[in-house]
Image (cartoon, rainbow over all chains, first blue to last red; front, top):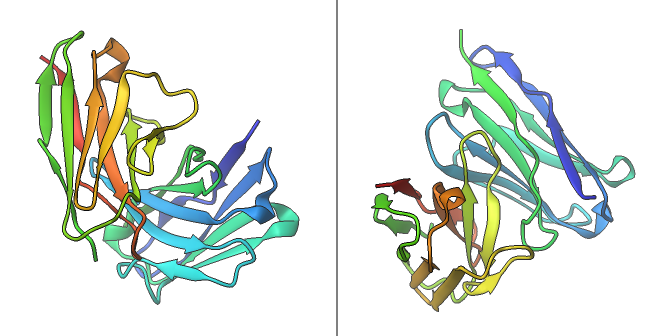
Length: 116
Length: 107
């Protein structure tokens, strides 16, 4: 069974940092690209980061470029999102999604609240 | 950045009715257009990929069409479990973008 499980969310002050993790199982993780998508409370979906299988190609949304860093560890079947210089508007539920079967598989999300 | 405009923002309908949701792109996305369904408190669920291909396990009442800039998601006969928010997403250009969503609510 394919599973994606995010963790690492929480309450952080503006300007602070946080690292999110997404642990994958049930498929050959190293073969697939991974994405992070977020959803602010009551709002729509926003794609924010992508890392290709192998890790050599990375893209970011302009809203997070220079502040967030996506990475992966194929030995641990995990993808990460390092978030720094956090702002109030980064408050959201953060999902990871695999390119496996065209983004059929998503995690349940981890909530990040940026507030003083 | 490609902007996806979904219409209507809200659609009020009854079980058994046929509904059509629209997604218009600011420039061509070829057929790299995907539809998701999302219910409160849940992750999005993939319905349609590459504009018209149903994902595994998706009922036949869901169908997608279109290419270029104009796309449509049709639900042929609404079931109670279909009341949700629907998003389109383009994967033709970086950054990937989502539409603002269409909420299908019970009339």
